[in-house]
Length: 259
Ligand code: PGA
Image (cartoon, rainbow, N blue to C red; front, side, top):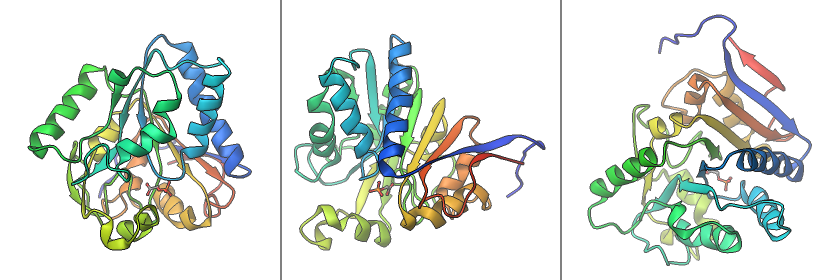
């Protein structure tokens, strides 16, 4: 694909933290500062193991009355299809348990795609409408899959995609089997914000920790911009930071990657 970059344009900023705890502290602080600075803010949130350190810190700070989510609205990236929101393995349950139940956010400000919508297409369109109605996402948190997925946008995902129904890659189902009793229990499909929905966020913060993510990170930062590696699209975003721990950063160097 032809890449319309001017020389010197920043593609992504790379920040390296010592370890997972330092990475979580930095990300939590960065976003907390923005929450404090604005009356209202819209956050794009992710599930998975990586953001948990951030969520733990936010909970601590809310309990200590140093931070309030009263002015925060959130949109989660994705949800499994076929699971009702209150299913123990749904991302709705995950987010309630790991964050929302423990902070002072208004339940009506929380948005997560619904995995058991009767009309999935209509639900996806409605989710996009809600994001627009909220004024768009100010800061989007992302993890990255070992195969380069962001949200559940697996290799081959359309760059122009909005919220849509996807089939999960086998590697993703295997990676997520740890949250289920057996691998067969992992749903085969999900609803995910598309790459276009993600790219519409004003700022993106991708978090990655551990050696297992280092190749996917290096390919996202230095590789071709291609649907084969969905996270590579982030090179086209005007305000994207990769916040990594040292192991995830094995294939990259700190600073601004420019062209
Ligand atoms: P993880 O998942 O945070 O559990 O590693 C990230 C992802 O697959 O997007």
